[in-house]
Amino acid sequence: MREELGRSMGEVLWSDLQAHVQRDAVIVLDEDLDLLDAAIAFATNEVAKVEPWIDSGKIAKPTAEELSRWSSDEAMRFLCVIVAPFVLVRRPRAAAPS
Image (tube, one colour):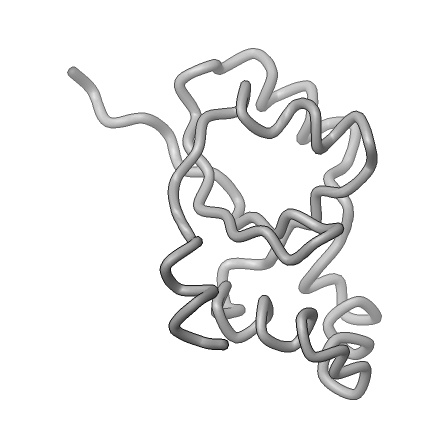
C-alpha cells in the first residue's frame, strides 16, 4: 500500500484542487506530519492515529482564509495524495521564481 500511495502522490496547482474543495474533500496536513504516513492511516482507517491529529489541529479542512489566499495565487503548488473520498494535501509552498 505504501508504494502504491507513494506513486500516486504528486504536486498539483490550486486549479486542480478546486473541484475537490467544492465537494468538501480536501484535508490539509500540518507540516510536521508525513503525507504518506497520514495517507496510509486514512486508507487503513487507523482511527487511533487520525483522531489525535484532528484533535490537535494537525489535520483539518482548509479555512476560509486559506481558501481565499490560495485562490488569489494560481501558481501555488500543493503536494497531495488521493485517499478516496479524500484528497490529503500539504500546506502549499510558493511557486519558484521563473
